[in-house]
Length: 267
Image (cartoon, rainbow, N blue to C red; front, side, top):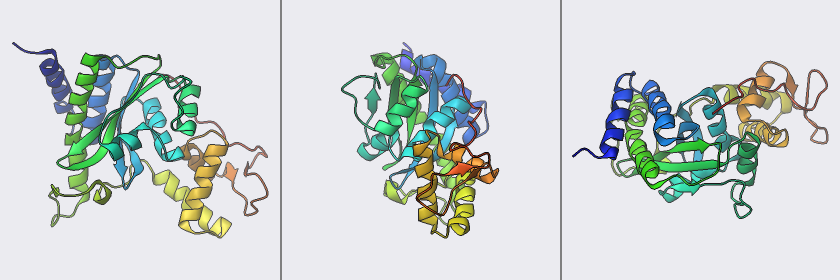
């Protein structure tokens, strides 16, 4: 007799098979998970060296933006799921007892997200990322839904393996089964604008690459924006970060904030 988990696996595999390998398959997996798991948004986070290397797959542009908060704030359930190699389940971010990731939590609550669940994605012995589920209403991820989410996290390893294999040279294209997560070769995803903006800040502020990135992320924190929003404003010359630390960053219109990102809506 076919179990519900077998049916879930079959449905997810079919959705991924209908799309091109890699990012398209990851997106298809996330979109399918929204309906199957009764959540509002799903994303596949890539984690390298203990930090977010990007969002590889997502069910929508809004889910991708929500997931980027891991990079902007340097904290969140995905990072903890990878470091612990175990699921991180938060049924209600608004609960008084929930004090983890204060910046990440406040940003999600402001965006109307109450529940967040992160499951580690393994490739052989390496934990390379997390499947992130976002829900607007509070409440636990039920037993069957959680089991299905774990199946989805297993399947998410396939498109990530395509990514990793594609990033390696022909000589070392095979995944080392003994590789540690810190040695993961996954390239940064969706960070082109951020690195471009930090490159513009280096000569403008007379700082190192690390300091430029720190300034960019600090402004994102101070203005409740994502790093990509700030980077986009810098690239488009709508935002200028001053050399003098005594002054607040300002945009070309004299405001302390760059223009808001239009990508708002349901996860």
